[in-house]
Amino acid sequence: KIFFLYPLIPYFGLIALGYSLGEIYQKDFNKNKRRKILIWMGTSAIILFLMLRFFNIYGDPHPWQSQKDFVYSLMAFLKTTKYPVSLSYTLMTLGRALLLLAFIESVKNKVTDFFATIGSVPMFYYMLHLPAFLIISLLSGGLHKYSLAMVYLWFAVVVFILYLLCRKYTKYKSSHPEKSWLSYF
Image 1 (tube, rainbow, N blue to C red):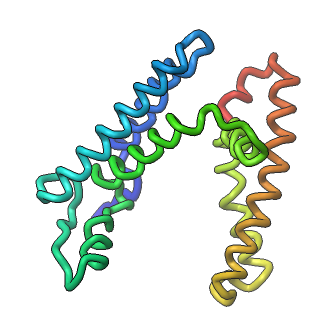
Image 2: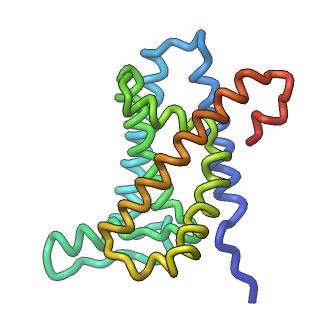
């Protein structure tokens, strides 16, 4: 029996969506129009998620059911399948992300600069974060022996170190435009 953790078709669709959204981030694209598009797309995704999930029509292999009280029912409603990715999970997360993009574009500060640095080289970050946690786990005898607070501390340390590496790599990429292959990593 073969099990695919990352089904290609949904992820290809998400990649295509991200690629097509690049059009609205061109320098000559009107910021107000971009904001309206993002709000419309984000709101539509959330409404579609709510409708599909509430009526258990389609979108997740595990239908939700009412629970003993409102809080547990809400948790059951929001518990969607991430692996393999379900339509419900995708709509729920993308909708919020698109709305967030619509409302934080004009915010510029050290926090947004931090995330913009990592976001400028996402594949570089992704390729380094897994080995970083593996090395820490191997050197420390496994992260499972730490408290949750300690795991969060390790997480913060790794993210900060990778941020510094991303910053260096971004500078390297921008100072070597002749190396076009760097844009893929």
